[in-house]
Image (tube, rainbow, N blue to C red; front, top):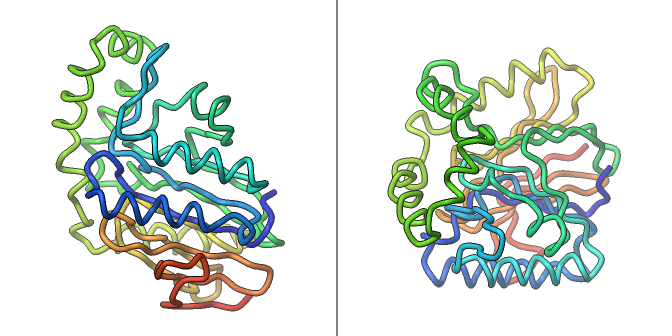
Length: 252
């Protein structure tokens, strides 16, 4: 269970995001103290994340420090892994203090029965190629072999191979994930809210006869986020304040 107000963000891709984008996101995190009860990172906070025994990617430290401060201020932080940051471990869980999971999260947020999932690999045709390599990427032996590479070499290799997916806004403008969400919400009547990321397309829609589909969009493209309270869910644009500019809102 997560308490409200609950903020949800996704797809910041720090590491390739410009310094201005990184600073805006860090500013957003610093503004959550005293405003948020919980925060959800719905995948791909970093364009590349990997933990060696004593090394982490250099460009992550400002965001990690801000996240640690958010956690210490009393905000519960849940991180649902995406396809770019699925190799999290002790640094995130123990040093930063977030709840990090590789897979979907289901629970209650302020009375809303909610499922949160990054969304990679879900589309039947478009994601077929990725589904073939995902088991290799997450295989323990493959991860161990990658850890044996020098971090500079490994980081260069990872950034080069991920260029297509990080610069990508879904060709279908998010319709694939939206249709999957509509089908799942129609089938699972107990769900009030289904949240995806990954497509880089912000969304907030009540599915007819079912629950609500939402996507926080991509901070890499525009500083949008979701805010869930007891009364409503809002799609907001960061304007220097955690309250943000409302783009869309749906009441319970």
